[in-house]
Length: 531
Ligand SMILES: C[S@@+](CC[C@H](N)C(=O)[O-])C[C@H]1O[C@@H](n2cnc3c(N)ncnc32)[C@H](O)[C@@H]1O
Ligand code: SF4
Image (cartoon, rainbow, N blue to C red; front, side, top):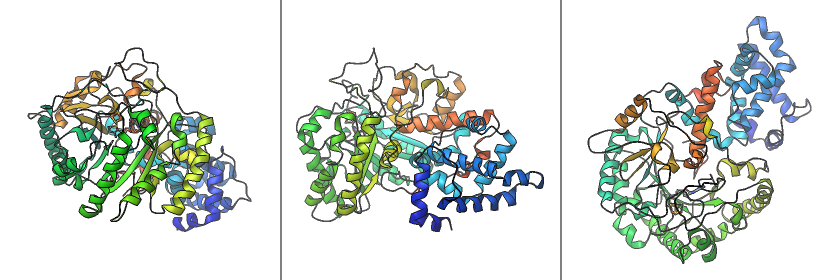
């Protein structure tokens, strides 16, 4: 039934119009009014006790419930205390409104799927239930792990937090492979994995073997790579690559000059293009289920390149003569591992970028995305475009906010090892994903232990949590967090605040935060569905 409502074009556009503006009371003339009111009244009549029914059936409480829907659809981080203060109601009244909303398929759908918070909700749902593990300091294996098998990196991207002179000794490769194999055995597919960096994963000559060992444990494996070393020869030596679930190539420009500007390596664009075309031709023969996509970080310096990403896709696809080409594009905001901070002490870098997006630039991006969408629809109807957490809002014309980033004072004392960790070639276990760069200045305090042939990840986590040694944060420590870390930290912080006033997630307005969601999801690069 819910689906029928939202398939209706008129309803969808009025809903979007209402959601994308500051909250307004729904006018009784609006298309949405009847639908909202009928739903609210139906559920309130069923769930509210006799004594309070009359009060809750009045317009005032109806409007308050709709305010909650509007807020959560756009701002998944709002706390129950904030809602209480804005609506000026008692905790009991808020509990009743939350109960009504939790029991409505329509309102749940609007909160999770229709607002600009949609992309955040996709990440929140599988992890929210487990925020309690963090608050209660329970020992548990993490729900998500990114492994960093890269030995070194050949690029010098100006927004990347890596230490540009650090690399692992080649002899650590074998150690890494055994550590990862043992880890896959320990967690099985109860943990969601990806391979990223750290440095560049394809600098590891045993990458194929690592992937195969994950597959043996029924783990679906996505890979993030800059594609420079993904040559015919490398792929031949690492046939395990064909067992990947998806490969996301980081696209650092749209021609030689723009690529050089970011990577500082000559001819990197032509190398990456050649490798991509070659990879896709083989993909179509060896494993057409493997999804291949391009990730583009939108920064002030490259906004004008966004439209030209489709030229890159066109060129790749025209050269892949035996079937499908690029499957997806992900557009991402800079999560400010380097930009946006003035850091006095940090290792020397070839160059760094320092500008950040603002509202004027986001407005410009909105215009470009309109054109981007229309070319995509006409020419690449099957290409999936994922706008990520914040560019999704820009794509709808909401340009007032960037990426949701938490501040250091709100970070959990012991991180959230029960939710997410990063592990490198040495077996070092990092609390935050951008801390996992070898010898990055200031990252040591985020290493909670080292995996070796004698211990398990569960033991490392237990020892850390039992140690009582909480993290002593500095104000700029958020540079060690990527966008996903910002989301997880925000969930934990919100769960803590809600619990403090005794409206935990289970009693909040969003039913899905109380459900233990199966983590059988690849990632949302190539689909919007939580599969
Ligand atoms: C650190 S890289 C490691 C893997 C590989 N070297 C690469 O570049 O694809 C992992 C991903 O993070 C992205 N990334 C790095 N710095 C970023 C930043 N400041 N903001 C957003 N994404 C960033 C990269 O583009 C890449 O897609
Ligand atoms: S983003 Fe990736 S390719 Fe660029 S410098 Fe960092 S690790 Fe290397």
